[in-house]
Image (cartoon, rainbow, N blue to C red; front, side, top):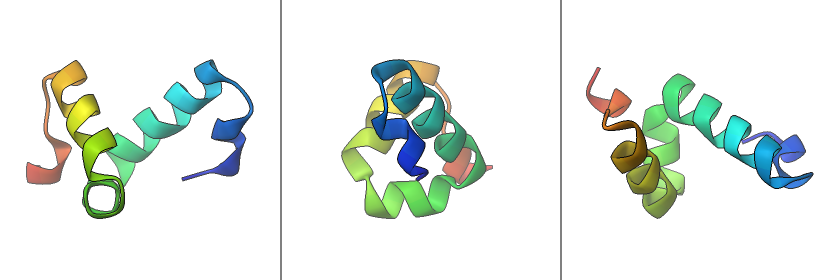
Length: 49
């Protein structure tokens, strides 16, 4: 994930959302709990697309 996400909460959300949709396999393997939270939030699982 991009380090700009550490600048403030809104930017963190933007960066993790981008990673969730663009690199789901990578995120699920390195940040499993965060991936699960976003999966529940969006009610989507891009890892299966």
